[in-house]
Image 1 (cartoon, rainbow, N blue to C red):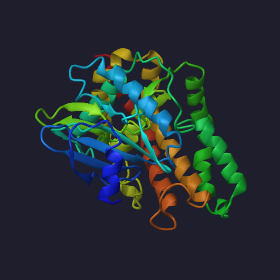
Image 2 (image 1 turned 180 degrees about the horizontal axis):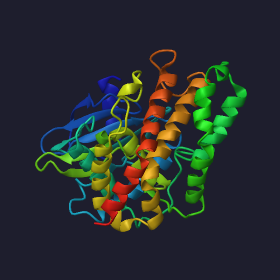
Image 3 (image 1 turned 120 degrees about the horizontal axis):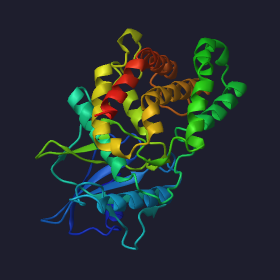
Image 4 (image 1 turned 180 degrees about the vertical axis):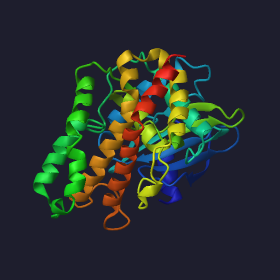
Length: 360
């Protein structure tokens, strides 16, 4: 996108100072993100073109982000650094619509750092602190949030999609993946039983981040400590166990998500302990007995969901996930299944670690 257009869009927001330049930030897998640099002492800003295909309800998404960040700001010592600050359009809206495109802006937080991968137990611990603190600050948040992505982490909804895809078999692949289909079907009852505890309120719902990778944790450069969770596009109401489980799926995997050599894929129990310790150091006091009881299982649940989703997309003709080669989604399925098996083998140890950390 040319600079003239970017300047035009940025000028529609209530920013201070004169814009000096606008540069691309990051790789932009979903949204297109830019840094808006201003002249002199005025603050800098983040400008994003939101992906309205992935997020069809951008206004609802922005309402969620505004509500959550305002709640956090009322609780922290440095509200301009310890959460995002949404910059509205000059007309007061939380976004700008330009044709089919939606744009949003927030304050740039200086003197910060992010990490692309948690490759040490210390980073895993800090990642746990970041998400645990985010959830703890929002434990008393009561306002309803918009469901911006239908059925996110809802395995009952995923199984409805799964059953329809298997029945349709649009590209004739079902016959070739009977073993893999069996992996999913053999765990159907167990996963639905877990989700029913969320549906009936046994496991309570809270504000969830829903994208808990380490790159969504902002660190303070001067101190090296966790500052806040960022990338709040997927903030919704669900069980906080989903956030923990998603983090365990990504932090503890010793191989790549699409690892072809399955011998490289295991769950690193030390990384599990480190993340759980950081998470519970912030979140333990707000958690119910049922949440603690099912915390370790959450890693299995989210990893199973990813097995199902990768395999379902393969059967459906690779329509959702980007692929680099024809069997890419099948490779992903097998790698995630190997990770799931490793979690199942170490599940007793995972539960023991949660009990130990919870008793401190």
